[in-house]
Amino acid sequence: MGLGASNLNNFRSKVVDVTWAAPGGAVDLGEVFGAAVAVSIGSGRTTGTINNAIIIDNDDKGKQLEFWFSDKQTAPAFGAASATPTVSTADALTIIGKIDSGATFTDFVNSQVATPAAFSPIAFSTENGGLYVAAILRGATTTFGTGNVVLRLHLTIEEG
Image (cartoon, rainbow, N blue to C red; front, side, top):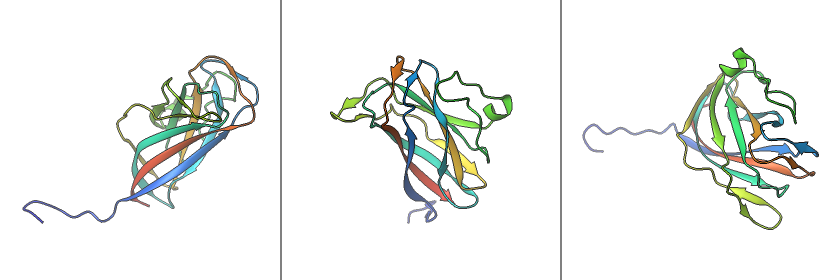
């Protein structure tokens, strides 16, 4: 290695799928798509970054969604599905970042897929190896069927 260079051996990549069942009814613009979902990213104390995401809409609607991340040790309350978000001040203070699907999905006949615009990596540090993520509809009011939406996260894990 050259002068001033260092060798890092403690980083690893991980891909995690987070799945929401479609609500099976109408969801209005600005409403919660579903309850916050627990995401297992490690065991015990875990630190790292969310670097990339892909959204796969198997309900084939292709509507813009925001995904809000929290490193709270228990599930934060974002509000009920198909209702306006209601987040306490304490839960709001645990929010570590957001990924927006954008409005442009690619139609794969039975699914719609989006790759969000580039975003700054979302750093996380959690004592229990988990994060929580909630989804909010930003596209037009839509009646969802029984498919699901998958948020595929590409992570770099530094510890855990």
